[in-house]
Structures are given as structure tokens and as C-alpha cells.
Length: 202
Image 1 (cartoon, rainbow, N blue to C red):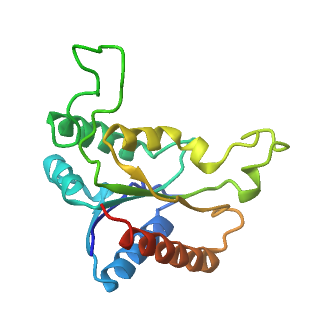
Image 2: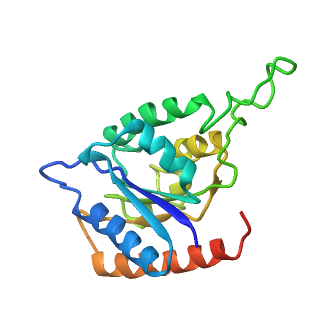
């Protein structure tokens, strides 16, 4: 069984208190614990210890990042978490430099990560409808996918050597929510992803 770190990166607002992301994080914890995994859950809005979070990343076989997409990226408190935790982990725990060497100072930038046995999964919620993505006729994302939009998150994880698992997204959660259907899709997504994780050697 795996060690799993779940990070709830929600910034609560009066108009969006974060119940859906908290529910998804809790569902993941309960479902994965029931499968025999050991799970730690960090809710960033409840405060955190920087070094403990670095150590949780080192401990984890899988990191799940759960957050609402705010202004095309993470909520500001999740960015603050990354700035603090990831920077602290650059002491060798999360990465050994940025991948370059004195012999090749221009090559292999971003390839110094030490979490090469760690996988990660992004799970996000959107106000945008599903139909806004993967469709070149839609002018805003112009055919781009959810993972295209979240490329900085994926690059952050790659910087530390982590391997990407399939992402999950719940769409249109404010104007046209389908929460129960989203929960069912999320449960099925976890079943599929962690069945694959169980059969892939670290």
C-alpha cells in the first residue's frame, strides 16, 4: 500500500467557501484509507508547518493536489504554500539544485528533482464548463486542455522529479453544478488511478 499526501489548496471566500474542494479531499482520504493506504491531509487554510510539509512530500508515494482554479491558476494561499514549502525543500530533500552542473551549465535545467519515486495527481474545480476546453472553436482556451492550462503546476512537480497521474476536473461548479455526478466520477477516477499505481513498481 502507498503513503498518500492530500493537499487542499482552497482559499475560502464568502461567495465560495470551499465546501466542494474540502468534500473532494475528504472523499479521497476516506476512499484511499479504506483501500489500505496511509493518508495525510493538509488543509492549507488551517495553517501548516513548512518543514513538516517538506517531510510529508518526502514520505509520500503519491501527492494529490486539490484546489479550485482561480484566475487560471492556484489560489494565492496555495502559491504561498509552494513558495514556502518548495523553497525549503531545495536543501536536497525535494531537489538537489536545478539539474545543471558546472560541466554543463546550460543543460538539463529543471532536472534536479529527488522525488523520482513519487507520483502526483491534480484534482481541480472550475467555474468554466467542460465545453470550454479541447475545442478549437471556443475562443478563450482555443483548443487547450485542462492540463495545458495547468502546465505551471505540472512543471513544478516535474522540477522535483514527480511523475504525473491523470488529472481530474469538476466543471461549471458555480452556475450549473452537478455535484453528485462529479462525486461519482471522482470515485471512479480514484479507483482507476490507484489500481494502476498498485501495479506499477515505484
